Picture 1 (cartoon, rainbow, N blue to C red):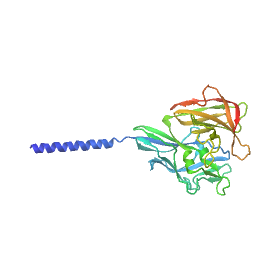
Picture 2: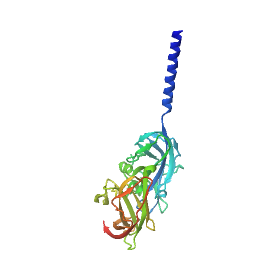
Picture 3: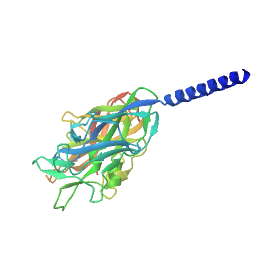
Picture 4: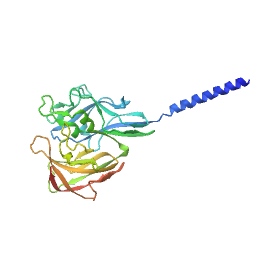
Length: 319
């Protein structure tokens, strides 16, 4: 009888261990991530739209489970804080650094060619591709995706057209092309909505010094140098290291969205189409009076906060 009692106790202990093990397996925590895309402006007035066909979004090599299907998106329709939802996924809690956009260069969502292209105002589609050996996958630059143990978060992929598309002079196939693969990756960034803020404001130019357009560039504090005003890299990208940028509207308003909480500096550049070729040339850096007394070289942005930054043009420094 004693042996029987011992065996029964041992069996019960094994059952308890097995039950506890199953509970531990079930305790793997997940969070839901929604992926959206937004755009920075492009400095070519002849461009009507820039269409990219997104075939999937990958996190650490795996396609997100709730991808909304192959989508052809005019990125220029999603500026100034506007976003387009790509899809979502339930992911194990943790930090991910390999986030990729997978593009279809050849066919759009309706099966038409090309899949990714610039549409100019004359109705012509100009196929976009970095080169014959270009990868269809764009690894989002310095992406850090934080997935909480519960709840929902939103990750915004900022696809900066100003940095990613260049004029393809002398080409017989397309007037535009993507920059190199490495430059294309550097033209994207990922921002978590929950830890991002906004800078918005108005540029008043009573002296009419700012030409055809004003672009506001935002940099991490202390990172702007004179080299930013010259072409850099294989594709000659201007203001290459700006976090993002915004074009003022007809009333001088601008909106810089999805800035990670931190300290920034802003630089305002005037543009003119001096040779009437639909491509804007830098006219000069604007010298400004800040109406609310803030320092343009030390703007602190908090998560979920909006900084109002109104300025008046005092003079211009030619580049």
